[in-house]
Figure 1 (spheres, helix red, strand yellow):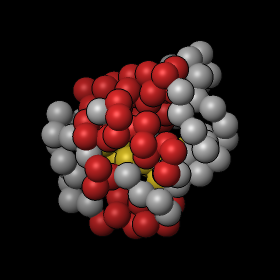
Figure 2: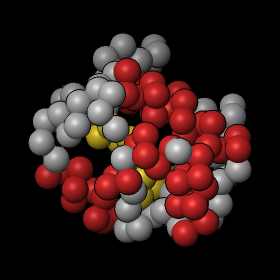
Figure 3: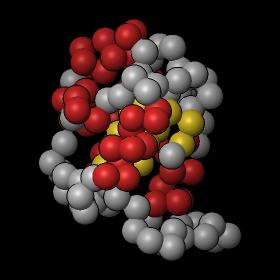
Length: 123
């Protein structure tokens, strides 16, 4: 699980940090995961709104994770954030069933998800 502690901006490195943990061949000095990652839960509890740049960051992260066969699920989704996700179409690409108000619900669902949760390109 990853936590966004403010606005998601291009160049913030969030996508790179997530991908370093997820992909089999991360950058030097980054330990790959012991077991394959199936789901990344991004906690947006401290992200009260999204702008176009933030949506682009999320869309890029979702696309790259999808190419790796990993699902991106969002937790702590506030009403304003949900509205932007829906209007942009990203909610449908991620899968609305993978947008959670509570972090605990998202983590529990990710742990219970079949392997793989939806498969690449299914969101």
